[in-house]
Length: 328
Ligand code: MTE
Image (cartoon, rainbow, N blue to C red; front, side, top):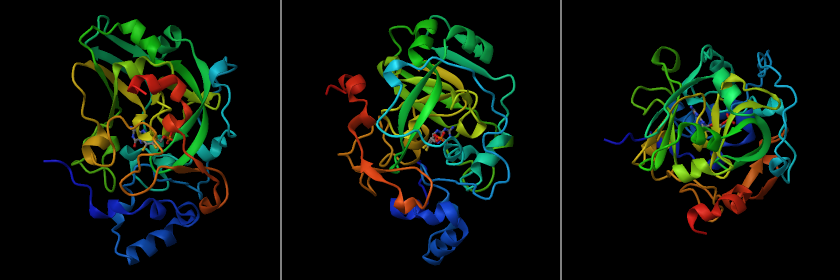
């Protein structure tokens, strides 16, 4: 039987994103509870923000400078300023650690020592990479990408890492491989608990791509952000970044990559297939069932309702790179 998200998941985007969440979540929660919305569901939305505004410590503590990396000239700038580093580092989703406003702090429980990424399935050269292998085999570069959440907010982020196609060349998928499943770290002792982590959810977090999508030059594995190693809340030590798709496609803290014949089940698509399709390309003409996708709020400081609202671009502005994948 398909997991049914509790009804209060269905609060609209306008309810999910008001400035009250950012600056006075407690009062906001009270008002919604008064309106009959259950507390359990308030932490469900796909891309809700979590500010941690009362946090005494830095959200980027513990990260290490990557030194001067070459910036890919094709992705050296976009038409908007880069989002402030500390703002991006407090404005996260990582539901394995819950859905509350202190998620960036809760995510510090992620154990990143001795990290390994297993690459398996329909490949000629299965691999288990550690971080040194990844660094040695795949040359890092910086790319500034737009980031568009399915819930209509957007950032601009300088990632560091390498294009996924380099890994494809290393493992050599067989001709039977048509899809790829990416699996995030999961350990029920660390990542299960109350709220957003019930055992009935389809953990671990998984995402998937068609193999041609993975081979596209834009598809990226990030091992850093803002010139530093990834903070845990951004998906340390390695995560996916697929800039022409909604943010939920970018699974964090990847431990396994499998090459498959058939399309894999994925986390959000299993939870709410009517709202989160497998392809999930950014598309201003295809509304989410509960809100329009025609425009987006640009994440910045100040009250959320005053954030600039700008038109959303097809494929998040990357049509010249990816439209041919979809016959357009
Ligand atoms: N990956 C895992 N493993 N768990 C998650 O909850 N959330 C997704 C995506 N990757 C998520 C995940 C969603 S909904 C978004 S919008 C982005 O991560 C947020 O990335 P950020 O916190 O680095 O901005």
